[in-house]
Length: 100
Image 1 (cartoon, rainbow, N blue to C red):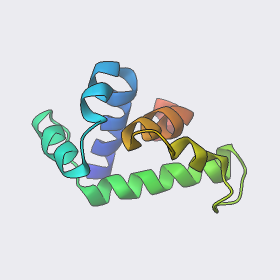
Image 2: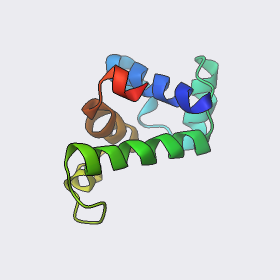
Image 3: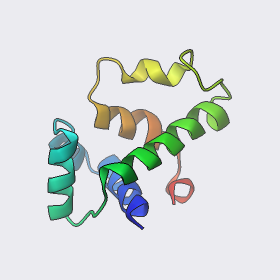
Image 4: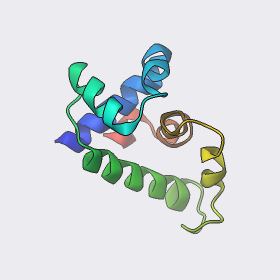
């Protein structure tokens, strides 16, 4: 259930530039605290599980690359805030239906 909440949070951040801009500079503990205040109930473990599955899905299924350090996805992580990377380069590769 909480993993679904993290997916809902990613979808909300993807559809709301203001929400993304507000959360992107936060550390994970800050994000968890403020997300709960905004009605998103998930843990760091929930987020980690979802992120791992989504990253693997992008690399293995969408890009058809090996899941190792040579994946093109990893280059998008450098020089950007982590939430921006997740929303713009990982979650963006999935439809809402695929995310659910």
